[in-house]
Image 1: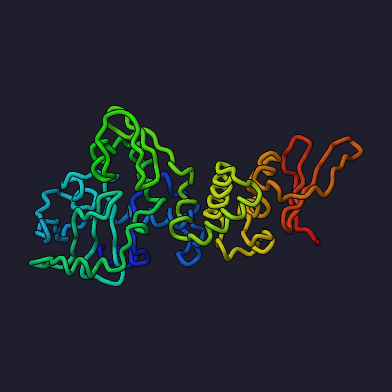
Image 2: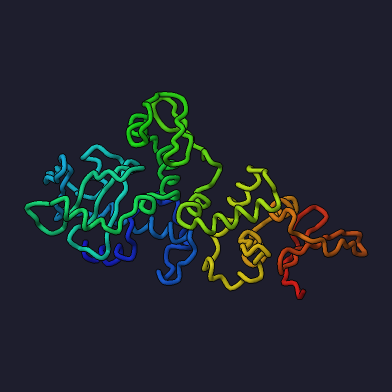
Amino acid sequence: MVRQLRILVSQFRVLRTGTISEIRPDNMYQPLGTITNTSIMKKFQTLIILVVFFSNTSLAQYFVPKGEDFVEKQINVEKKTIVNVAKFLGYNTEEFYTYSNSEDNSIWVVAFKSFTDEIIFVALTKKSDVLTKERVREYLKNYEFSKAFGPYEIESTLNDGIKNKSLSSKFLASVLKENNILNGEINANSIGYILTIKNGYLTEFKTSDGLNKWAKEWKEEFPERYLAYKIAAKKYWGENKEKIINEINVQADAYSRTPDCMLNEFIELHKSEEGTINFKMLLVAHYKEKINLEEFKSINYGRYVLVSDFSNSDEKKSTTYKVNKTLFTFSEKGELINSYTANY
């Protein structure tokens, strides 16, 4: 069973924690090769992780850090799942994440403290008398903390921590290098969030820079794309930072839900004169995403053109606007009636 799981897990370098509620049933059975939507891929990875986390690994051998070395640790639990092993060592599911290197089978998985690159334990499936730091270092040669525990993982962990009341102020203070407080706010600059603590546990969080998890991912992993959207937004919003951030958030979120992402067949119809793609309107035009006239004007501020303002024989008014190469018609109540490709 473990060998079969490793074939599946080898599709992904980084194993991430998550919740079953994040996985939509309609996405679970898509062939791996066709999943190019960022949001769906993240959820599919989460499903794989759940399988690994809760699989019995009774044959595994566990080593924990001790000074500069690693020593074997006897895990006295009946079912040696990754979750149970971590729990035995004093960590709940929101307090750790794991990494697996598909190119190296000498180690099965490495577990780290959430929000850090600090190793909790290393799991081996092949018997070994010793585990050297050099061997672990070699296994982790492709590991990058910012990718292993990026914006999506950070926000998912925070959400789960609130839901399960599992992220204590003591733990957060230790991993974020902040003062331990029972009540109040922690401005966690290292992860870009302001955390609210009540009665010793995380209860709320908000971004300190205003960016949502998808925009944060653009900024960290695709800085050129992030900068392009920032420059484009600034052209229309000037120095209005709140509006600029909101526009980036809208487009990054829409991008995460766009089928085939940058390879989407309708990309060219929604390319702006600045060279950015209006992913939000792409979803509205081709994937039945809902939008009203007020939202339309806000999202496309300075970029839409009034094409027609029409009333029919029943005195029902409709208004049509053009954005890039697509027309959008709204009713008098501001509801989207139709969208279609412009011939000019």
